[in-house]
Length: 236
Figure: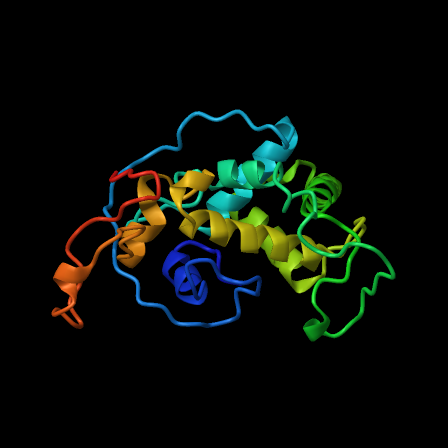
């Protein structure tokens, strides 16, 4: 797993697409990345609706480690990805309303069978965070959000590898959900709460929701010189 600083470029190179599918950090799918504006930014003020105070601290810390702030630009925390995660939990997606969710449930099926667990995304986060904090308190004497960076990174690695124990749900299931949604929040349109300041788009050189590129058709293999635009017209 490559979340140790400096690991941001590796993470983004492995992220794959603008809205990547769930997968391990070991899936090395190359992308073309360029340095974003190296400026200090902060997420807008936000009060979580789904996550309680301790869960919110966990999510913020995890996001700060999965995509850290560095010389390439703002990280997931600065780009408001925790807000994206919280807002998604109040949608049909968060409630598991977008897929068939009746039994029988198969926990050892083949990957091509798709998601086979009974947990909705909301339940994955609620149980996974509780299990994670309990495990950290048991082994380290403190919740995940209060652990030193190296220890917190090691714990995330244990979730990814499935070696963490004592939980309600498989630890890798929680890690993959968290990683997938963090990626989505960092690259999705700012309309959905994350990618604030269009940090993810600026890093990739992605122009966003511009409606017309006719004036650039005759410029193959040249970097698009105009900054990104969000769906709601933001040109931050």
